[in-house]
Length: 133
View 1 (spheres, helix red, strand yellow):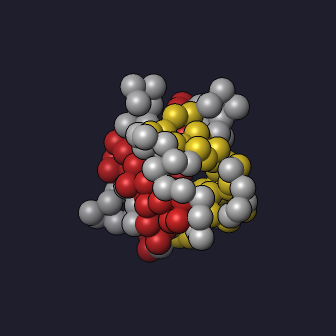
View 2 (cartoon, rainbow, N blue to C red; view 1 turned 90 degrees about the horizontal axis):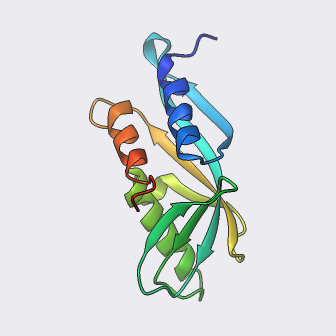
């Protein structure tokens, strides 16, 4: 199956940030273009923070500080919402796939390419995660 250049461009953008992604999965729409892309990455969560922020660690993980307390899943909801906002996704497109009750989690982000949210839109969101944060 021939994969369009968006897939490679998108993965390179994550690589340039220093973020390790694994287990990429995609589906192909009409014209052999990728319509959906799922990427997983590791996140280290710090709860009950005064400010919410995000950075990429030297190990290639995301480190995220969120305001919510780790009580009754509130921190996971806050994490999903914060990551979704930063990645340009709906919160339903960000899932905690491993480590729901731990500080170290695996997150899967589901990207849907469309005319409204195309590759350029998602690349701009990724660039905002860079060192200036």
